[in-house]
Image (cartoon, rainbow, N blue to C red; front, side, top):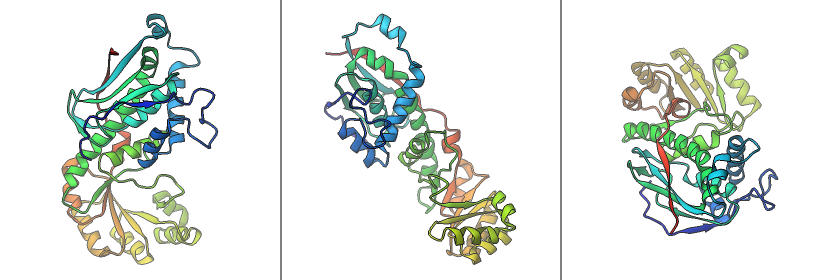
Length: 323
């Protein structure tokens, strides 16, 4: 995504923690409608994002108040909070941070957007400014930063893989190895970094793995059982031998996951399949080896580490006087 120029101040109504809150009703988001639309346009459910914001804040406040802030900050004081990148990377989760402030703020607040999710940013770059009551800014600070730093770390790691694969047909793809409760956000971060998503849940696609094969009595039998039970669901089959590659491609598998194949073995599998199924490499993959695997002709590289092992991107929040 291209860099976004500095945008004008945008006023948002207070969020969903008051009488008008839509959180938990399962019908309508309590977020500002414009923010909710931005989230929806990004492929996120505004109600889910609002629920996650409530969960994060509830965990941080634990049924009480921010005692330090309540004791040190006058109730009517206002300030501006600047989100600033402390290191270079790819940013993700800025609109979700706005949702956190929307939940916390008891009065209307203003945001100034200096970057968009997916932008490559440099150390010291200003990303987002929020003007609101100082107490609200400080109460929301850690929850908002936890989300933005986590998602930006995933987006940054994904971008490294996407850059290595540039010029090949292969795309880096995530897995279901995500943080419980944060799957949709973490998979969104992968998209921000230039990756693509594998299945979102156990129900939207089938992935026949070794334990399914054992239970069904063979790889072809497992594939056929899923195909017969769920004929409209895409079926991917994990294989670890050339014999299994031949079995499942002849059986009609939509996708084949090549588990822990070497580069020469992957080349052989591509030749055997000859375009009859989509191929995904998994295991043995590193940034150093990724290009070699991509150049064999596979369609995807599955990298669970994108969501289970990516370090955060260091982003800070600096408070300044409102003028």
